[in-house]
Structure formats: structure tokens, C-alpha cells
Image (cartoon, rainbow, N blue to C red; front, side, top):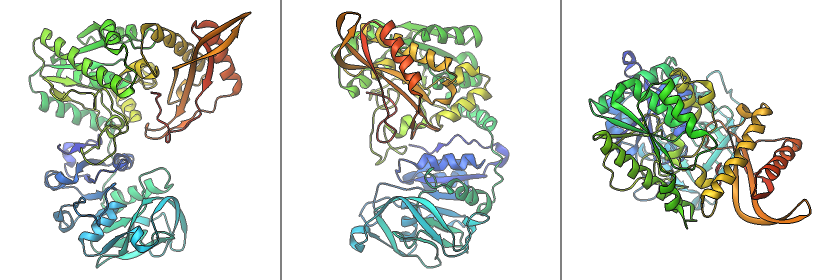
Length: 533
């Protein structure tokens, strides 16, 4: 896999004004890139196996080494190319990055169980023991600051040239620095929100230590991506799969801006959309953007294939495969498109496989990642692959998409199929559509839609006894979900008033035949996922 731009696109005039992030397989590597972007600096992530090539291609002004699930003392664990340490540019090593830098430069790293002290996980407090360029204008000697730790191994002896500049109870080498070479290592994770000053530390590194201006904008990303799309596609045809959500819509508009009528959008109406959603998508693309659109009505195909399937992964795999089958068929009708465009985002990628194809743990397959068949007749164009949802919305606004569309809550590619645990049928889809529409209507009426990251109803494979009028019912349970989030990687429960939930539950039970009980899901992410499956 080649190195991927993070979305913080450079202008050509500042070709080397960037940071190279070396990915060792951490689940949160992309959050490093996000913090760099927030500091207004372009960055690219490269897997450690391809970091040397990326370094020579980019000539970066600084390097950040990511965390990893691997253990430095273990044979075969990842290493950084030695050329990075000899290049004369600043380096920041985070967690595993600190440890691998220490090991490769002559220090010592030992497993926690060998030292008898174990690892360090979760909230910790460090004490600043010496001045350091990373701390400039932020932390002073003697101060204590909260950080977030997640490591089993630890540095037991730093490499020549380094000194300790901060310590914690579980990590005596919490921050180490070699000011002469501008090499820094943090045992904690500054990229996560649980390190309150973490973003400022990363900003200090890229702007103060590396000397970068911090003037990147989404407009630059737009222009760079357009150039990349043109270079990748040439004069070939592209079909873009519209799911009905924000991601595929933004991807389509961006690609259309790049290659015009070489793009045809294919909207596969799988019968698993929300209420009136299909009509909205068709109207937006045909009437507002004049983008060629093929509307494929495939409800019977999808629901027929889902009959009898209850395992969530099996449902995702079937939907993913069928999407691609339909696209290939439509491509043949169009006259042979060579590229398939998708609105894949970073959280889709990282929860399916590692960003590098490496050792990251699979949480769930996404229809446009893990569900792809092994043999595909089209190459992929995925211009949003390194962005988070809120950044896609920013790009959508930059491209002129209406706020009403850009601001919509995320909706999974497999649609309602994964909000109906158990078997998916047309009857159950129709029941859920009605309940979900009532729920979203009440949210909008209460003025809460924009305060919520994602809200939806779920139709559970559970029936309970109810009383309606003088009669006994035995119908389905509907679960309601609403969360707040910034990037979809973590999420908190939205704290509705009890009166709101009572009103929604009453309407759903009264108006939707087939539901006689409503519950609210109070689980955050983690430990739960945002979606129900």
C-alpha cells in the first residue's frame, strides 16, 4: 500500500512544508494526523514498511512515530528506517514510537512484567523536570499535568544524547528529549483527547520545533485532491456509488469537479433507506448538480439475498458484494468504467483493517472496505479515505453543498439492514422506517438535530407483551440511540430530558403498528459501537 495523504493538502509552493507520520499499526494513528491538521500543517501517513520511500518523496520538515500494538523487545516487531534518524529533521516518538527510537539509537526497552512494575494504562499525571522545546509556552518545570498512558513495555535506559524532561509514577521516562538533534519521545499519547494539552504539544512540535507556518486550509485540500483525481483517472470513466449519505455525495461532487462528465453516479436503491431518502438523493444530483445519475431500484435483489441471514458480518458481506456486483453490471451498461469511486472515510478503514494493512484489530467490516470481493473489475477512487466526518462536512461546504444535506447525521452504507438485528424483511424495514422518521421529526422539532452526532431507531428481534386498549399485544421492541461525537472514534450518550423520550415513545407506539415498547440506549463508545448490530 502506498503512503496516503491525510487530507491536509499542501499547495505546490510549499512542497516540503509537511510532516511525515510513520504508522506502526496503532488504532489512533490518524488522530495524530488530525492534531497536525488542526495546527494548520499538512501531513502524510506512511506504513513503517514504506516510510523510507515516503521520506524521500516528501522531504518532510518533521517526523512523528506512532504507537503500536506490537512490543519493541519482541523479535520481528516493527522498526523505523534508520535513514530517518540520520536526516537531520526533528522527530517526535509517541509511546511505541518513543520506545522504538530509544531502542534503535542505543537505549533499552523492557517488558513491564520483567521490571516488576507492569504497564501503565489510562489517566496518569506527569511532573515536568526540565525545560524542553515541546513545552515552550505551555508547561513549566515543577508543574504536574494529566496525560493518557497505554503501554505495557517501558524505556529503562535512554539513548545517548537524551535527557529526561518529565516523569510519571509508572513511566520514569515519560518525556525524553535530545535538544541537539531535536528528537523527542513521549510515553503518553498526546493525540487523544484524554491528554488535555496534547494537541498543543503536537502544535508546538510542528510549528515551534519544525518551524512550519500552520496556514493549511480545506481549499488547498480541494485543489490537491482534484489534481490527484485527474492524475489517477486520466481520460477514463468513473462510476461513483451513492449511498444516500453525506460521504458519497461529497466524494461525487469533488470528483465531478475534477473530471466532469467522465463521472456517472450510480444510486443503488437497496430498499434499506430511511423515509423518502431515495427521492431526496435523486433530486439533489439530477436537479441541482446536473450530474449524470443512474437510479437502480434493487430492493427485491437485496431483500431476497438477506432472507434468512441473521449474522451481522454475513449481512455486511452480502450487501458489500451485491453493491459491487450491481456497480459492475451498471459499468458494463455505461460502456466500461475503469474506476469505482466511494465515499470511504478513515473511521471506516481503521475499524475494518489497519490503515497500513498491518496488525490493527478488526472490529467490524464496512460494506465499502471489508465487504469488497477479492476479485474486482474496477480500481478504486476514494478521495475522502483519510478524513473524519466533520472534515468531510467542511469539504462539502467548501464545495457548495447545501447545509441541509451536509449536516445530515451519518447513515451506514448497509442502511437499515444493520439496525434490524436478526433477519431483515420488507415488513420490518417498513416498521423501522416509520419509527425512525417519527424519532428524527421530534428531534428536529425540539431543535436538537445539530447538537447530536447521530440518532436513529433500531428494531430489536425481541417481542414483548403489551396492553393497548382492552387487548393484549405481542409486538416488537424499538430501541432509540443518540450520541455526541467529534470524529466518530468515540461517542457519548446524548442526555435527553425524560419528557422528550416519553413523547417519542408514545408517538411510536401509537403510530407504528408492530411496536409496543420503546427503550433508550445509554451505552457510550467504547465499550459499545455507535451503530447497533
